[in-house]
Image 1 (cartoon, rainbow, N blue to C red):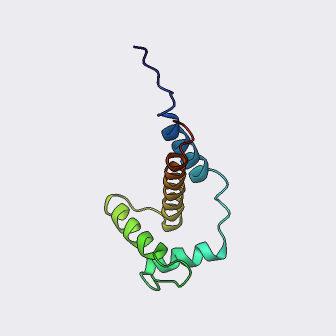
Image 2: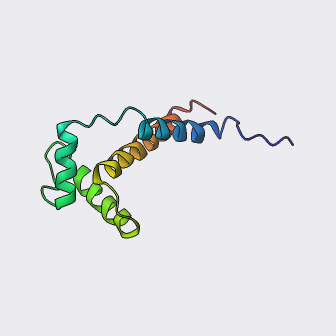
Length: 102
């Protein structure tokens, strides 16, 4: 039996990781005014339930709280990493659902 790192089952994990890294360290350095406002809400713990992003600020608040136990990190950077993680997870689920790499 031949062992290969990249096969049809592992390619989904590599693609999810690739898009996570691309999204996390790519062109997300130009934050909008909306992003700064959400980061301010998360850092203060205010307005955690926005009508058009129901759970975003609350999840961000919990995420930042957990990470800040271990290290003091920038709220905006942590929210960008949370966005990248959810984007990669959605792509992973989409690839699995569509059966793209079976």
